[in-house]
Length: 201
Image (cartoon, rainbow, N blue to C red; front, side, top):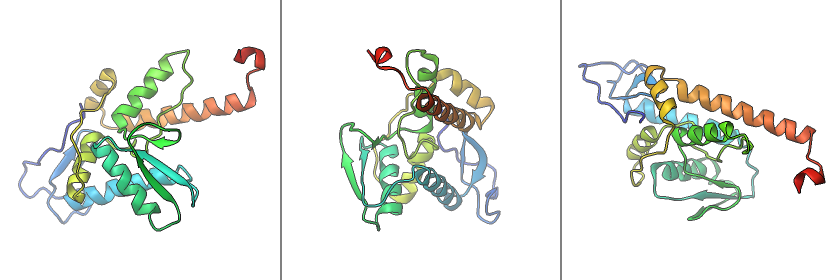
C-alpha cells in the first residue's frame, strides 16, 4: 500500500516547498517532504486542477457518492469550495447514480483502469472521480488537517503497480495519465467508427 504519512526523523529538516517551516510529512507517492501547510495547499491545488478538467457547467446538478471515506469527504470539500458560490446544485447520494463522482483514490482508479485495459471485452472507461490524482493516505491527512470527518478505508489496488510504486514514486501519476490518454483515444475511435445496428445486437 502507498505509505501513510511518515513523520520525518531528521531534526529541523526544512520543507522542500517553502524552505522555512519544518518538514513533517512524506508519502511514498511523492518523494517531497513537506510541512503541513504546504502539503494541504499543494493537494488542494491538485484537486482544483482535476475538477476544472471536467468542465462542469453552472446551474447543473452535481452528485457525489458519500461512503464516509476520506475520498468522499475531500470530494465534497472541493466541490463546495469551487462551486458552492455558483448556481450549481451539489447533491450527496448514498448509492451510485449516472454521472456521480465516486470516492475513489488514485490507487483504486488505476487498478480499475488496468483491469479494464487488460480485459479485451471491456471498453476502457475510467471511474468518474474528482480525487483520482491523490492517494488515500494523502486524502486522509488532508481531511485531518482541514478538520473533515471520515472513516478510514483501505483502498483496493493493483499489487504489481504498488510494487513498482515503491521503487519509482511517480508510477501512479504516470499510469493514471497514460490510462486517461488511452480513454480519450478510445472515445475518438468510437466516435469515428460507430457500431452498426447489426453489431450492436
